[in-house]
Figure (tube, helix red, strand yellow):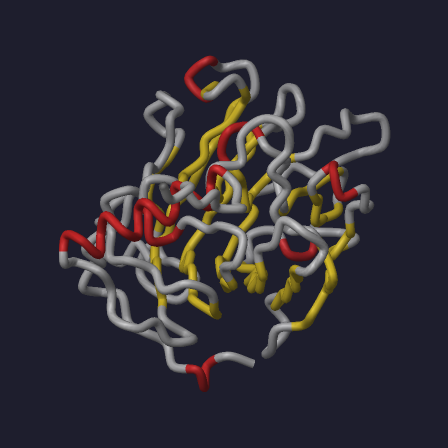
Length: 292
């Protein structure tokens, strides 16, 4: 009698293998992956809140203006706006004051340990209320690299007081990094981000954050984590990772509005990504020459 082989991997890893096998058996697996392949491109150029992509959820907040389209965008004709009015239940969802888009159900954009990805997005703080001494110091989150099931959030791009900062998973015990000491000069202007990550549940990963301010022509490396645990499973959850963008948490009696545009997930390495979803026609595959 042959003893069964026990795979030494997490539940998330086993589920991923089963998904890939299911797709392969169906005959609909992807071609060989190349560095620079764009797995998700949310550019809003068709003027819709999900950019025409099945699996992108614009918001769970119910207020009529919790999410809406704006013109122009960062580079094109359209962008998306998320709004939260503190104290109004129409802007309260998922147990917090928030209005966020998520790509959790766009399966090709999910991530697991072993994946290498680039995440790009552009953000504009619309008519941002400045912080004054004595005001509450609540942070407002504008972008998340998130893990399902309640596991520690690997990265949040946030504002606190008048600074923009990177906040990391609590389990990693590293302090937040202020990347813009004072956002006031950049209110109502587009700020561009590029985040390269090797996802790892041991201290073998990396997370490199680049930023381009309105007065800059090139991206600048603003934080560099190496030999770093980027994927914290934690005691609860950790099945898969995904991205969110919008407004999450706002100080009392404040209205926050944030614009987002050109949200991309780009393949840098790791297992090939099966075509779980039909990719929209407007997705253009990048070439390796675009990568610094």
